[in-house]
Length: 187
Ligand SMILES: [Zn+2]
Image (cartoon, rainbow, N blue to C red; front, side):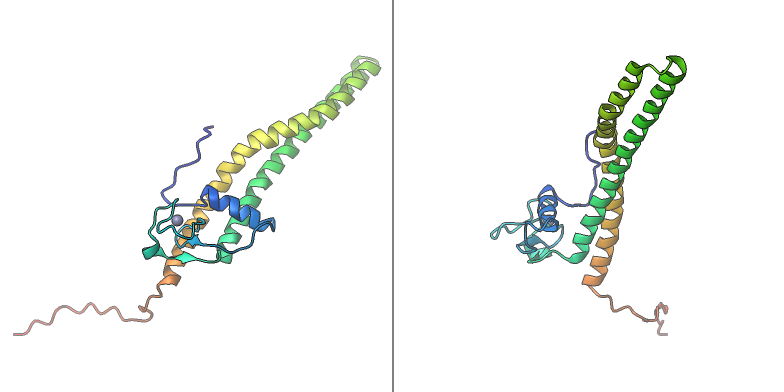
């Protein structure tokens, strides 16, 4: 599994926006500032193009507040990621429990309930549970969760981008008859 984030041709949550949204959701930052009108990356007051997506302010404009849809998108992204991480952590814990049961069974049936073996099993459960949960959740789960959540995010962003562009420029083709009459040939 590569450490490199998947390449996408669309801007999805720049590192700076990620940071700011994280603080906003934690209540450490207000939803106010100057944001890129295209990718929502926070911009300095004087910048005339986005430092992330490079769009010009004159074409995409800026926002003073992040739209609720963008915040919702971010929340779902983060939630998915942590759901995967937590599931893997529980998987690691579960594996430690299975090994513990195996060790206890071995101590009881093969070692005449050896106190040493039972103690070892308990110690393994206490330490191994933490270690396994850490490895499964923090390492494997983190990688898998990142990939999965990012893929979903890209799809949702594309959907949002389509909605945004169709909402931003309302089309007046509603109910317009498709007039494809051939050019009237005047005799
Ligand atoms: Zn931008």
